[in-house]
Length: 234
Image 1 (cartoon, rainbow, N blue to C red):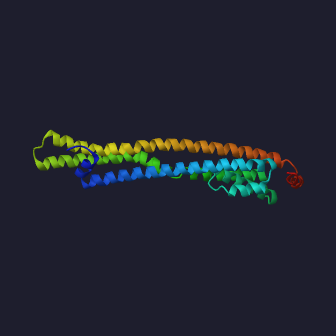
Image 2 (spheres, rainbow, N blue to C red):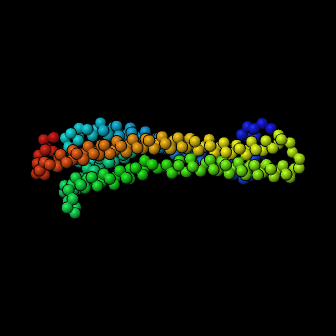
Image 3 (cartoon, helix red, strand yellow):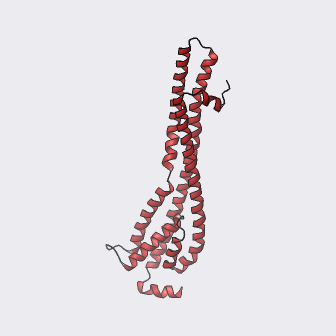
């Protein structure tokens, strides 16, 4: 008997087939999460670049209403959502101070809340990758143990058996461990890669929000009565 996957599948017991199907389902879930996250990151990166190009002149002129409206046009961009949330909170603080907090403090609090939400959204599906990476090898090992037990039971039930039959049964059982490792190793690599991407995105968001908060503080030093005239001049 050749040890190709189809031949091995045909000689597996029902329990081993169930374990193999479970491992394949883990592999499909891993591929699905990776593709979805890569597409989401690419879409967010594209919209962020477009948002930056259009937002730069609005920031220079400090046109807050237009900037908020622009941010709402890019819902897939984490940067646009963060800037929009900051500016809305800042405007609300200018018109309706809450609890003695300055508009800058209100905007800073909104930044932290928004970044937490964006971080959780960026890591969507990461629990699947980490679970597959840690569990798949053990599921494969379970399949190997079950396969070896089945092989020796068959040998015992059939009486005398040659070394070829024993080695074939063990090789079929070890196929489960190999399958588990083939699924777990890419899951670990993709998890680390995507985590690095998320960390880079979060660093960019933190730097951008810090720069905008500095700009808000600089603008807020101007008396409120002068703000309308500054807008008209812009």
